[in-house]
View 1 (spheres, rainbow, N blue to C red):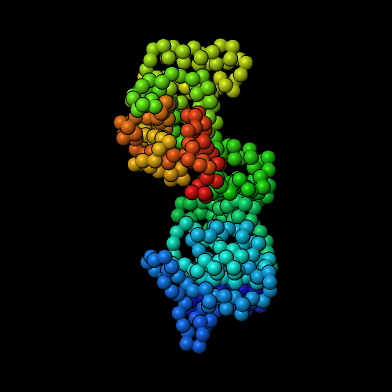
View 2 (cartoon, helix red, strand yellow):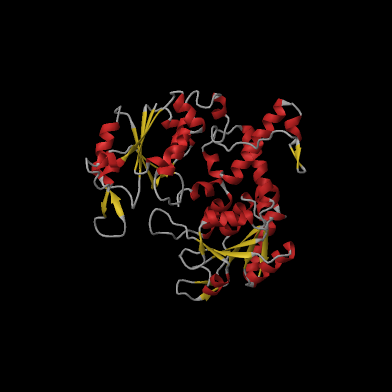
Amino acid sequence: MRIDILTLFPEMFAPLQQSIVGRAVKNQLIDLNVKNIRDYTGPKHGLTDDKLYGGGAGMVMKPEPLFEAIADLRQTENARVIITSPAGRVFDQQAAQELSKAEQVIFICGHYEGIDQRVEDQLATDVFSIGDFVLTGGELPAMVMADSIIRLLPGALGHDESSEEESFSEGLLEYPQYTRPPEFAGLTVPEVLQGGNHEEIRRWRREQSLRRTYERRPELLAKAPLTQEDLRILDSIKAEKAGHSRVWVALVHYPVYNKKHEVINTSVTNLDIHDIARAATTFGLDGYYLVQPAAAQKELIGSLVKHWEYGFGARYNPDRHEALGHIQLCDSVEQAIADIERQTGQKPLLVATSAQAGPKMVDYPEMRRQIAESDRPYLLLFGTGWGLTDEMMARADHVLRPIYGAGAYNHLSVRSAVSIILDRLFGEGGAKFSQKI
């Protein structure tokens, strides 16, 4: 395999002569060439960058040297030409495995404000980023990707099974690993690893791998090849995590706005009661508050819930009985807050929802992280009618980013919004969503 790296700073690639990569080069498993882009600017080593068309700060790398360099270095028509850029798709293990099978890979390391778009349009086969952050240039990403690719080549690691059993090889994060001594600073190696029962060790490692993936990179589970045993393990992990979330949801019927921006009390709908209770139960929330002060509406809610909790509905549909058992009726948000404080000893943090962007807005990955790491209880507030009042929004500690679809229309029913938001905060869909925003 041949790897060429085009850069303005060749000296930065000295680390690729060390360790496993250096050994692969020495053993001729890889032909690694680092070329200075300035070598392709003519005998006087002319400019590699120029001013940005249309105005703006910074400089852009010129196309001529890069076109000439690719023409000089390309050994095969199937060569993969990669631009390193924060605007590229995220490089992952699957991409590394794919590129490790190529005959030739050419990296173009970007600098300044970027590379003339014609280089990407005409020369690049791939544009990769190593994460959602900005570096001073493309050299470090190229080094990271080259290392990841080279170590997958047969013979590079010495033991090919090493690359097969590590993180991401099966779409999951790797399990914890230990060595001697069995006890250090009061910390012991798990007993199962010292017992010698290979089947128990296998099961322990698989469970730990699934647990790490669910906790740290749950989006990987969507593509991982999971067995029925894996799914059962994940179900138990999710149930365990849900038991510690301390999150409640409240459907607020008062105070909310109507279409004229007047404060009103909305009527209860049967579907909202059922569907939100089922969603809250599915995602392991601690309870579902119906905030409704009107006496007639409270009586209606009570009769509906009673049918499913104690009447014929409880016997006919036990699953619905379980879900509606999480409903608590209260006159105000303050009453819901007081009830949570009574149960937990802490006032909950209020997280409001709205179809409109505004202050205190937080995106779903960040809110998901905060809830997972916090010891505080949370109360998610959903408004009926035309949404929560300005006063209620001002009281909230956080306001979730609105749900945006394919266009400007975002008038979802509240029960649909609840299910989408709970999935983004507590389900596997949230992990996949976090990769897109």
